[in-house]
Length: 215
Image 1 (cartoon, one colour):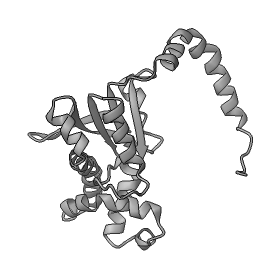
Image 2: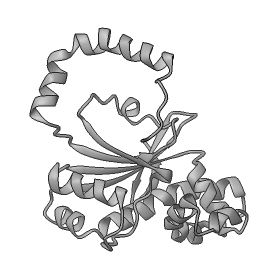
Image 3: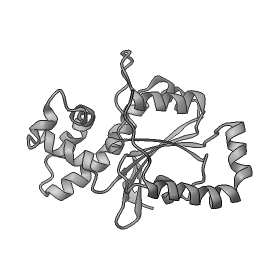
């Protein structure tokens, strides 16, 4: 049997406070969501980093976003090989079952996953190159982005550029999923790339014409 400890007291207290206030004030809405099911307009693929608070950035309510988080907000290449693919499964569900109108890939500043990819590709993190490293094998997805920015002289600038490449590589991979490409072609789905500076609270939007521009 799995070994699980009691929940920390501060989390229990926070839950009880939420149930007595936010939930109590909006109980009809929560019950409606539970009974009618979710109908989000957008999927957001963001980093696991605890500093990236997707719903706060956009002032979103419960039920508004279908959110998937992973290391460095990466989408892997389309690879139907019968193995476990959590991110690809989430994308498939969002597009085919939920019929979302938008998929947003949200990158961020000081991303540890992007920094890990940088160091691994530069030969500075041999532990990540091992076949036994789940992180290393995952951030290998970003290697094409590293190849595009590796000649930037300043390391801090190079790493920030790689954070944005994580968004672009993911958008490129997304567009190669057949069901995503089909939804885009039919006009039912659009892809969006964003990058946020968590310290400044700024947000940049990517377009092919202008690159990343602050909103």
